[in-house]
Structures are given as C-alpha cells and as structure tokens.
Amino acid sequence: MATDRPERKISVESGDGFWRGQFLAMASPCEVLCETDAAEEARRLTELAAAEAWRIEDKFSRYQQGNIVDRINEAAGAAVEVDTETSQLIDFSVTLYELSAGRFDITSGVLRRAWRFDGSGNFPSAALIEKVMRDVGWDQVTWEAPVLQMRPGMQIDFGGIGKEYAVDRAAMLVRQASRASCLLNFGGDLVAIRPPRNQETWKVGVETVDASSSNAEKLLNLAVGALATSGDARRYLVNNGIRYSHILDPKTGWPVSDAPRSITVAADTCTQAGMLSTLAMLEGARAEAFLDAQQVRYWCNRGVTGPAAEAAKIA
Image (tube, rainbow, N blue to C red; front, side, top):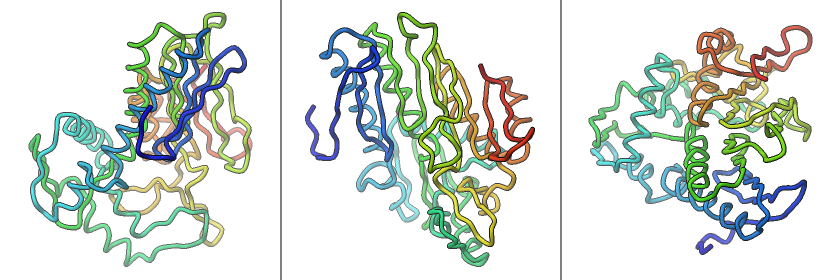
C-alpha cells in the first residue's frame, strides 16, 4: 500500500488461530484480528482498515497542516465552508454538547495552552486558566451548516470522537469486503464484526488503570458490537499529592472532580460507546448513575480498594 509517510507501515503475522494485522494511527497501536485461512485476505483487510484510519487522521487531526481542522483553526474569525463529512461530525459534536449541558465541547481543546498532563507536578495558575477560558465555549460559535465561524483565537478539536469514528468507519469497510470473523482494535476502542467460528465471543482485555502494568484489568466477552474506554491511566498530573485527571470541564477549565479512573461501555457502535463513556466521565461522581439511566452495559473503575473499587453492569 503506497504512502508518503515512512512511519506508516503494516505488519501481518499468524498466531493463536488468527491473523493479526498491526499499524499505528492517531498516536495509537491499532490491530485487525482476522479469522481466515488466507494470509492475502488478512493483509488486504488490514490495509483497508489502515488506509481509512490514516485518511481520517489526515483529515481531522489538529496536528496536520492544511486540513479542514487547520483551516478552521487558522481562519482568524473568517467563515469557513465545510464538506458533508465534517458537517456531520460537527452536528454530532453539537448533540453531545447539548446532551452534556455544555460539558462536552469541541472548542475546549485550547485548554492545552494551560494544562500539561505528563504525570509531572506542573500546575497552571488560575489566572492562566481564566485567560484561556475566553476562547472556550460552543455558544460563541456560529454554525449554520455547512458554514462555521468562530472568534479569533478559538479552535475546534475532534480528538474526543475521532478514534471511535475511525474504527467504526474501518469496521464498516472490512465488513463489506469480507465474510471473515474480524475484531478491530484502535488503541483500546474496538469493534467485533463477527464472533470467531469456534467460539461464542471474543475475549477482550480492559486496560488497567495502572499505566506501568501490561496486564489486563478485566476480561470481557464480546460477540458482535463495540467497546470504548475513557480514562486517565496515562494522562494526568500530580500536585501536592493530589492526582488531577486530563478530563477537563469546559465550563470551568479545571479537571472534573471525583471522576472514575476508567469507564468501559458496550454499545452497537464504537461512536455510541465512546460518547457514553466520555459523557459519564464528565459526570464525575455521578458517572455510574448516568450510565444506569442509559441502561447500557458498562464497567467502571475508581482506582481504589474495597467495595467502592468498581461498579459493573457488563458480561
């Protein structure tokens, strides 16, 4: 598969009765597990998934110069007309903004100007957070599809939904291209297209909240559908002995208090699962109550010991 990015390579190897295709996208390890007898088919499906992941990364990453997100963020107050796919993502983001009463906000990415979640004790001042917050708030944006206009200094960031959207898109293409049983895993956000031939479900490991551990926190069974996980295992800071999650409240500019360390949600699509896990994290202490109200399967870890360590409603 041709690419002008030398770091964009795929590998395909056999093991445990499956072919495992691997590549990097969106700063995450990605894999495609295929139950097929043909190495050529496994490579073809991996290439198909990788190409779609890289397409979405190139189009929607805030790190890519010249793409639609960069054009919007560099518009300096000018109106920008967007294509249909971008318009759909913006509409979905608006839905999440409304469902979360403003706690999910694609303009909040600029808070990275104040916060550095690298595990250190670097802590921003209240004055800096207040200054950055002037550029946060979807209510300051004019959106009349397909035209978007923001004040100078404001930006959008699809990081909160991009990976889940990418794995759903890749899974759709793989499902259309083959009858093979496949599982796609993009950095812990995954979709099972069909169950394995000789098993009822895929065995999926949920990442531990201890970033130094390589062991799975819990094994879950997934036949068909999606899982998405939100958490702070790798992105946090510690100040005066207090751990601050990278989950920020766009209404205050500060980390959400009393949020679980991780939440995994099962749903029909990864986009739905990611939406629910993210909205639950933003609920903080009410995360479990929020998920119970949605009547979804989930697993929640608060990173403590004893009866309050976890809540689960997931097989």
